[in-house]
Image 1 (tube, rainbow, N blue to C red):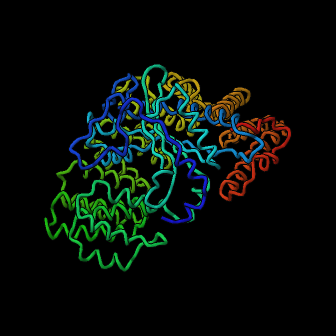
Image 2: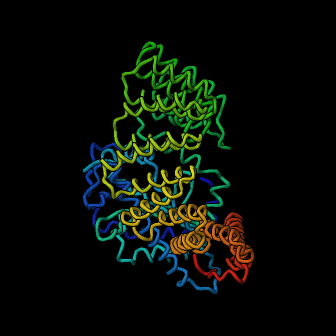
Image 3: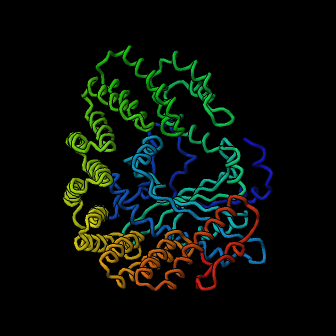
Length: 571
């Protein structure tokens, strides 16, 4: 741990703050030991589906999270406004930096659930994921941190389930933050647990200087679910030197002599996913392949997996021809594992689509789809392939795939599902690209109606549809209607994200384009100037955050023109 983390005395104020949490009696993270056969957890803390029952599938969890996300964001913004009022303006209070992440990706969620919660009872493991909906806030003083935490603790609409105060118990690298997971009720229908991470600006700056996050990712990935020798894994820490680079001498000595399949596979995945060291990932997977061939021969499921892993790395490196050769070798080696075969077909189809060999790509993709069978996976595969075909100008084929994805989704979830709205938007984009504006307008309208009913009137997905529909109407010359939709989108973005956001600037630019088309050039320049000033303000704000020079918002708000009519005190 770097001693500089101890130089800021005020960190002790946060460390001494006693966080109230888990008053219902559930377990804390510190109570969990991976050596136990099972860990009994109170079922009231399981994530719930939109029906209010414990989630049974990952799709149910993601569906509930999608509905919970806007409520979480609204709650955090409300707390920040209370803090803004509470803090003494005569002191050096500076506006905190808040970030709301997108929902955690499915593969990351599955991986974390398996690594961390596979022994939790009752299951399934992913029902204990509390960070699908998450955000972070960066404060500039301990007083701000403690005041915000106090507001959370006093709010009766939330229930704090878990809290980690790493100002009391810093991480291995010395990094300090607060991690609070709390339960909220959504539309009186179900409960959802979300996560807010609370950071101190000075710690963030030091963290960037010391590059500690790369160490964290290494530790988390490499030691998760460890079954081989701890000594070997600790030895492997030498792979990352003080500068965060790979120790090539050590790796050159390790790879030829290593006979541990698990170790090689974990290293290869680490290099590919966490470190994006594709050269070393290729070498590691190649050594794994040689080891497996010597043990099992050329025809074995593990051989096929190794070839597919090498193919994926080569594809990431842009070596598409070599990647195809590896995929083909995988299929020759063994086809007993349906998922490996399907993954291989899908990888090859993506390469062929990128090379604009759409006939062959579609054929391989269809083979992958027939093997996969699992509805959520198939829908995602259809959408991925349709997007590639659309980008290649193969709009007719892309539309066919979107229609298949739509049919499967409707059969599985019914007409009233947010995924239906998303697919309809993709179909509308193709119709718009093909000049079929009337059909595009109908699809966007239908998507908007479903989105409002399933996600709520104020969900920001509606704002995106308003903008897209506005573009279609603008193409048709319906300028007043288009301007009105852009106005709706802008106001929704201002309500949900604040006046100072890039999406607000985008809406101003769209409105400016309408006024220009109407030959109202003065109004167009005024609207475009508002967009430009917002982006300039955001750039200045970002620079201030990085430099940490103690300036306040008056410095960047001063560049805004008087005719903006915006409230610079808003978050």
